[in-house]
Structure formats: C-alpha cells, structure tokens
Length: 245
Image (cartoon, rainbow, N blue to C red; front, side, top):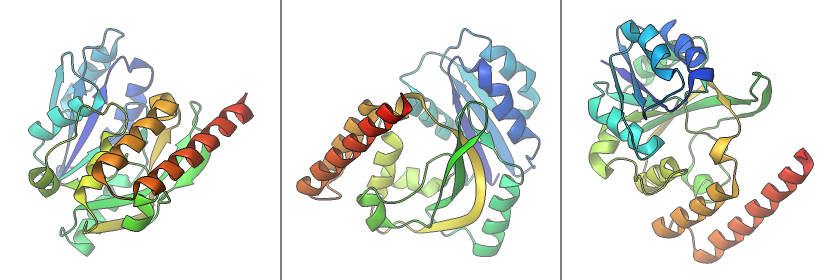
C-alpha cells in the first residue's frame, strides 16, 4: 500500500458524497481510503455505507475533534504515505496520478510532499490559489503560501515525532509541521491537487490566537517577531471581515 487517504467527518452529509466521489473515481490498488466519523446524526453514515466497498476502514464514535480522528486514522493506515482531505474538499482529477508519478520519478526519501490547491466557495468558485515549494524560513514567518489538505506525509514522520497534539483544535497540523523542524526534507508537486472549501473554524480569530500560541511554544521565531506577526494578521483579519460585510 503506497498512499492512505484519511477523511475526518462529523455531520458532513451535505458535502461528503462529493468528496468521496472525487477520490474513488481515481483510486488504484496502491491507495486506500479511511473515513473516521465523530458520531454523526445527519445522514453521514448513510453516505459512508453507500461507498463502503471503496473504504478500507471506517469507524463512527465520539472523538475530541478532527485531529483526534486523524490520529485514529493514522493508527489504522497501511500506506507509506498519508494524506488528509476535508469532508468538504475535493481531490482534483489526476491528483493520485500526480502523486504516483512524483514518487516514481523522485523517490520516497522525503518527509512531506506539498502541492498546489484552489480555495473555493461553497459553489466551487475559485477564490484564490496557494502552493509553493517548502521553505522553512518562510513558513516560520507566516509567508509560505500553502495549505495542508492533499499534503503527503511519510509514515516515518509520525514514528519520529508522534501524532497530532489534540489539545489544539484548529492548528494542530501547523504544530506538527513546526515540530518536524528546519531539516524537513520536502518535495513539491507543481500541480493543483485539491479544491479546499474556504470558511469554517480556520477562518476565525480563534485560529489566529491558537497559531500564535503554537509558534510561541515551538520557539520557531522570537517572541517579538511572533507578537508582531500576530498583530499584523489580526489587523488583516479584521479588515477582511469589514470588506466582506
């Protein structure tokens, strides 16, 4: 098994079918799909049942949030590479083909492999694009244009530094990448791999505050720089909210 795709769900019936369909239509024997549900009550389980022939593992039980669900998936995954797709995201056509081609041509000696993605609204309209080669300095200073969905993680990373820290409810993926450290060996696929639906808890002041606390804990920049970045990002967030209104 080469790639494990993990989806965390909770009352995601509105979008899950679209996400699953985008994945199963391009899966190969070298891929597996895991769906970890937090005890949904809205019909999510009916959709999972409909796609059960394509799902290697699924469970539905109360959890401590998306990162707790991801950790459960990691423990059951059999792939050398693990990626996480949101229940309201879409894996773009040929994404798995791009993964496989990169691994065949560039090899497996990477910690993470990044790609590009579109941020879209609920209707699928592209709002903006992100994705560039990994750069520790730019990431530490919040200048790296990337997002987590579709990123491949080598299993050895979880074996080396552990799983996602579930005390963080919004930015545990950023905490994980910071814990990997400046010597992270990263690859880059210069293709669009995912449509990521914008909004939700990640588009909130709570996310900004948690990100600030994580950077302080991991000491990837000075406190002065961290506080200054926090101020700038908060100002941009407020301006964005005003413009939207």
